[in-house]
Image (cartoon, rainbow, N blue to C red):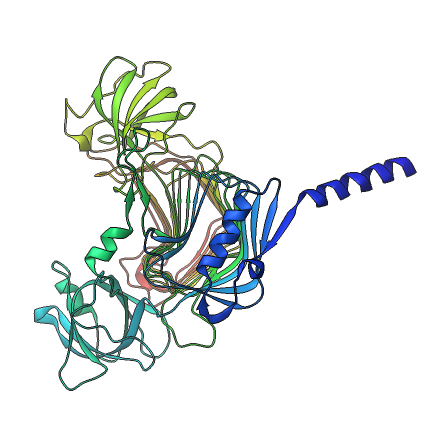
Length: 575
């Protein structure tokens, strides 16, 4: 036994010795909140890339000013890093609004933990609505003291949201900002004109409400210079640098983000593309404590596309986002041309910044978007790169019924979804008032033990009939969550096609949830089968409009309902 203990101690000692620790201070980082520490931190990352074995880069509980970087959208980019931990130990990273934070590309086993992330100057402004011009799609806002006052030179104008005047709860009215004008003789007063097509949204606002929106002073020329596009045969046309999120992970495996607070972003907070096994724990996207800020992120909180495994999101907090808190989905590779019974030219359906993560060994689900049905599945034997978004895909067997875009328009052609091998999980998270949906869930998985308050949708699951986002709802469990004051639908799962549909999809399990509704529908399901509703408790407020029933099932089949309790004091709906 003693010899065994000695051997174990020796083994542990060797493991500890193998880990190398680098301190950013040793590379010149000051952490005084003024000095540009980006070059010093970049030197530490470069040294870590050349150091064998697990490496920890340590920060101190200081404020590190991260100055602008001209050659890349992200302040720091890591390519093929392995077993690297960035340990903030409570450090604050104060980013410049011309850059995002981190890009991790093809990394494995990277850990980012214990940071606070903010921006200076702020990439947004806020104020109080003082007058409305609904007929012209315009309104005036008095900017709060301490916030930037944009003028006609402002660029990259983003969406903005109207917020209740006495508490930071979003009203559900929002619009894209088209133009900003300073008013003569008024230092803090600006006139905002809605973007073309959004003029009618001004009618939903009221004088005295608060308004917040994002913008930039980066010139279009400087903005364009930040993009980097691959020129080599293996990456031709691929965007290697883009402003997708404060923290971006592309084609990464088994990385962890832990105990990171975000107080501002220039767009999405996290963007994950083609990543597997990513874990986010105790991440908070929140208004900065001790301030009167109205927003914490200018777009989605966690936006994840095409994960074969996960992500796994636990004990996180989301509030004050100008879009969805969590958006999990899969984008399709659309069949553009059939070259043989098993070989096809495909085109990825996501926007230009993100190349397809489809690869040999994946299993794809062949999807008919007209009838919203799967035609079958097959393994990818070969996926040959042609250019960004384009592949020559060979399957290991023929799937009957596939149709290409040469025979019909692209919107009706067969789509390939990469099959998820282990679904996403969102557990024990808190979602507070924000502009849209707490969880957009277009992937199999588990939603358990979360609390959703003052959002406009709680869980929203559906395939997109007019572009390749999905797949349709199925193999999803929504269990033991609480939904309170959700405006439109606490749980909505919709299967959507381009033709009349018979029920399909599923299974979908909605169990043990608690709904406290004062405005919307608790559960809405459409054109699905294999549904289980068990031990749910729904309480509708007397003030809930009558067109919002507690539960609405349209064209569904194979529905099992057990121990469902609905309290509804509305006389016309009391059953």
